[in-house]
Length: 342
Image (cartoon, rainbow, N blue to C red; front, side):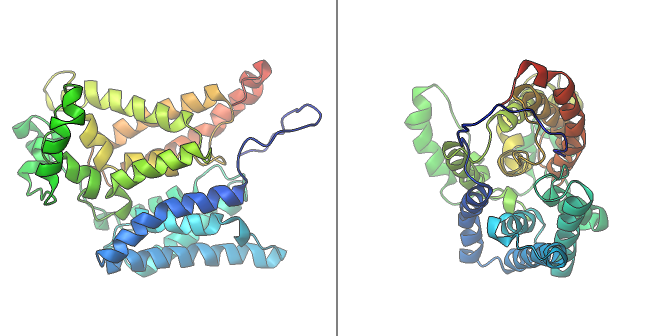
């Protein structure tokens, strides 16, 4: 994606971001708690797919590095891509397919679409999209149905009608929060949302532990590992669309959409902080990043609707990755002339 050089001033230069190796290692470490939980709960299928995806990305990197006699494992990008791919694949997917799509996604993105550090299609999004196209029936349907939405009047109510199982401490935690912190601001959190934060019902591991993803995002922002513009523009745009337009799709008029349900059931947070923030696929200016995030938010609403989608978020990344080169072309022709570099 990054093909045209930018004019820069003479030295000295100041390093404002961590190295690629440090970014990859820290990001991988923030995924470790999710992997640990999978081990503690004994989710063997998820762990096997995770190992298969890691293997696929490693084999793909070997196929690329051995002919050129280059060792690119040291930057940690290969391991991170394997971890992300494994966490975004359904646990019901065959490990052989998990290995194959991880290998294909990594190889295709880095060989055909720009090379190491310059690919404009995210290898993880590419891998999961390949998995969805080849095994669509393995990916779960929407968590809520049209009939359920019309009967309940909102997405979370429809989910509760469909045998939604809360974690044991959901009621007590919600009650304590409502009587203390949230009560101070006049906010009441209904029962069930604690479950969505802590263990959202999904066969895709990356969609389950939203509270861990939120804590991880704080670390990533604090250490300057990821940029804040794209994920914030993405989440705000998607949230506004859900709030004002999601119920209109079911004949309930405007406003009243459930933002929390939408953010916690389609992997939106995971995608916002782990995939959309890849520096190889993002525009380079503040304006470009903002436009990219807004377009991603609108795309997510079109593909995920009020929430509960298993693959809409991934295809959002894929779609925005295809649009970002156009944004960068405009950056090179227009925005860069006013030195709006982020």
